[in-house]
Length: 339
Image 1 (cartoon, helix red, strand yellow):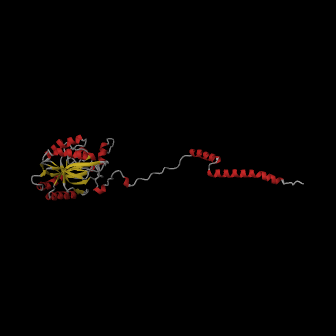
Image 2 (image 1 turned 30 degrees about the vertical axis):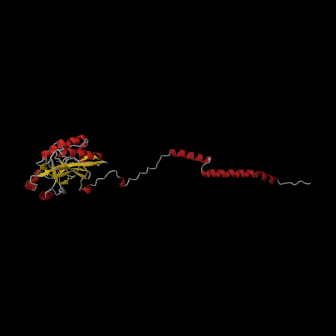
Image 3 (image 1 turned 90 degrees about the vertical axis):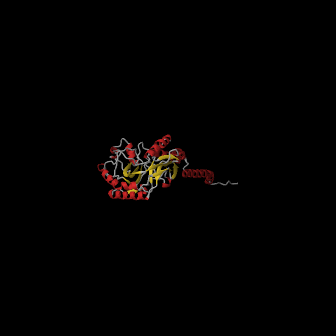
C-alpha cells in the first residue's frame, strides 16, 4: 500500500497554532495593561513624570476664601447714622451688659419750655453744629457705664439696694446757669493713651453737652457716692465715679466738628478736671488739644443772664423730692427706693 504524503506546511501550521494563540493573548494583556496605567512601562513613565513635577515651581495661586455673610457676625456693628452720629465710648464685649445708676427727675412743663428756648437760641448762634434735645427726661448720672456680666447683675443690684435703703430721701434743685461739658470719643481716648503718637489728643469726635448742675442735694449725692457706691464698685473691681464730681443733668448735646484746626479751637469754658470718657469739664491745657465749640465764655455768660431767673422759677417749689434711684442693666430698668 502506498503511503500518502502530506504537505509539510499543514503539519507546521498545526504545530504553530498554539504559539500564535499564546502570542495573541500576550498582546491583549499588554494592551490592557497599557490602557489602565498599571503596566510596568506606564508606571515607569509616571514615576519619571512625577519626579520632574517636583522640580517645577508651583505657579498656582491660592484661592481666597469667601467672606462669611453678615448673619455670622460675632458682635453688633456700630452705625453712627442710626444714632445721630454718636459712637460707642466703650467697645462692644460679648457677654457684657452696660449698667448705669442715675437719678430720674420729672420735668415740669414750664422748665421744658424754658430749656427748649435755650436750645433754640444756641442753634441760632452755633449754626455749624446740629444741636439735639435730651428733654425726654432729666437724668443725673451717679456712675460711669458699668460692664457687668449676666451673673453679676442681680448681686450688684441687691447689694446696692440694701445700702441705699439706709440713706433716706432728700431734696434737690438745679442752679440757673448752664454749663458746657465735653467728653471724648473712643478714638480720642485711645490716641491719648498712646504716648508714642504725636497726634495724641488731636483725634476727631466726641460730644459737647449743655447741662444744669445740682445745687441743693449735691452734698447728699456726694455722701451717697463715697459711702455706698464706691465701696461696692471697688469690691467688684468696677470703675468708680469722679473723685470730685459735678452732678448735672444734660438738656442738649451736639457732635463736635472733627475737622476744626487746632488754631481755631476756642478757650476752655471750664477749669475743672475729669477722667477720660466722661462728660465732666477738662483742664485748659488738655482741652486745647480737643475739638471744641465756637462758644466763647462771654457768649455763654450772656445766655445765662438771659435765662437764669426763668430756669430757677420754673423748677418745683422746694426742689425735687428724691426718694429713689434708677438701675439700668441692658434694657431693664429697676427703681431702687431710698426708704
